[in-house]
Amino acid sequence: MIEKARSQVYKEESDERFIPIRLNDIVTNLMVDLDLSSEDQLLFKRFCKIFVALYHAKFFAALQNLKENYLPFSPDRTTLPLRRYSNAELMKRRANLIEDIQTIINKANYSLITQDELNRALAEISPYGLDVSVDFDDFDEILIYYRGMSNQIEHKRSWRTFFLRTEAVEIPIYRRLFMVLKLKSSCSQSSKTSFFVDPKAYLTEKWHHLFQYKMAQGGDSSFIYLKLFKDIPKSDLEMLFPNTRVEMQRFDKVTMGVSGSGGIIGGVMAAVSKIARAAHPATIMLAFAGFIGIIWREASKVLSSRNRYFATLASSLYFHNLDNNLGVLSNLIEMAEEEECKEALLVYGFLLAQRQELCSQKQLDQKVEKYLQESYGVQVDFELSDGVRKLRESGLIEESDDNLIKACPLVSALARLDREWDDLFSFGDTSAEASLSMPV
Image 1 (spheres, helix red, strand yellow):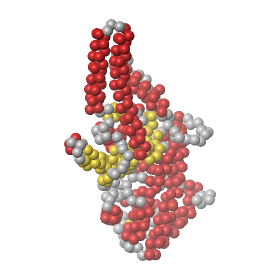
Image 2: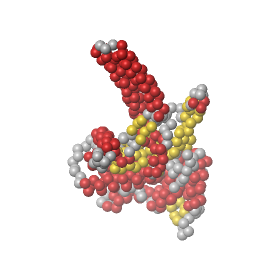
Image 3: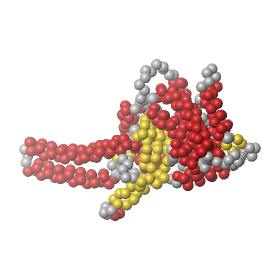
Image 4: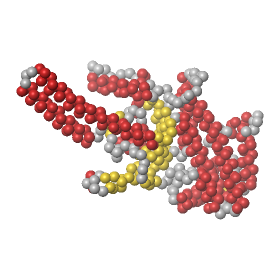
């Protein structure tokens, strides 16, 4: 099961779109690493400050739009529901919400976990000693994204070393994991199997519907649940779902079965011997009471083990849960905003270092990736086209007919950013509201 991180080591995987360096660190180091003059360093710092402020304003508008669409589906709202939505309105808002979330999550450089990838991950054996299962038919909507894959290295004792010394074990983990879940309505499902055709299948289906009903009591099917986690083992994805069924591993079942069988057989033998020696009704009742007590003791062991599993699950998720529902939207917007700014400022900084010389996008992409590798030791699949697009939208680069590009001089770029900032809040200008929409 997921454990609270202590002395753990992470081996990062390469070729991620995510740039694992803080925006402020990138700006500070670029001013030195690009060999800018003292005057250009000050101008570049001002350029970055205004550019980031512009994108913050645009993404703030996107956040308000996300909140508005999420309002009917939020399980945590504290304001009065002053408006009733028709089914058609709810369907439209839900579609818009999912579309906007997918746009934002892509800008935050998260990657989708497809259904096939999810099935493969769920088929892996948990390194923490649990057998768990999830029924995806319980959900109307499932979306899972991750950002950052690495191997968590832990040192554990195993039977291979006769438990005398530890050995390094690599556990693949998702550094960040985002989930969208919407439960199906339990009343919307009816039995598809007749008791007289297949009694076993009928009873299994009824038990499943009862399980769904119990799950729906803890979560309303009209809500959309948003979850953000950190450092989740790839083999433990199923533990994040609300309908996870936890079972003991086969070894535990055999161990408990052997001990339970021994206890029950011993109880039966003791009861039979007592009955054989005494025909008094009180003695017979006492013997059977002892037998029932042994059965209850073994059943209690099973229930106790199951409860310990759930207690460990709850305490583990406490340390791996980053945010829920409405708070997740704010987190995603902040991450998307920072990633967008990193990409654009890296592109502009390296174009600036070209001293007004034209440069191909392929050359520029290689330079940025080499810089990130040599300066920070990270391999990044840098999205140059995104950075160039953002600079082009603000008129901060110049392009030749053969698609070569160069940066606008800093003074001119600052003037253009200043005008764009003023235009964001122009009184009586309807185009200003449109410019506050989320960057494409």
